[in-house]
Image (cartoon, rainbow, N blue to C red; front, side, top):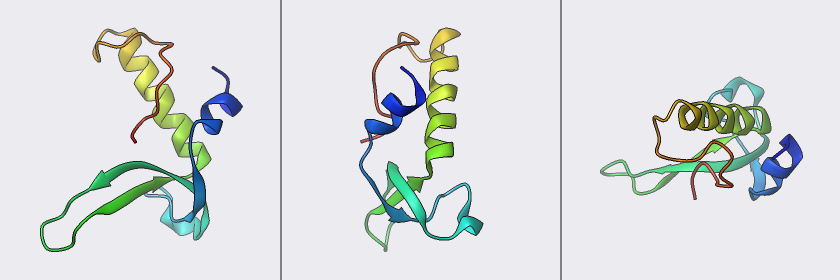
Length: 79
């Protein structure tokens, strides 16, 4: 999959990227959910640059056989 195809798999909304909070409010996608004890559910959001980086990391782990997934599997980082 190319970059645009990967990004098209996500739902985008303005938010703060967990890796780049200094960017302020930018288009982000949910890449995970945290459940801290007294707070409830918190979304982890990432900008397009980070979504691509996370997908590349996932693909590399799959290539090395560390994830049990095929490197080219079509999959979102988190739902």
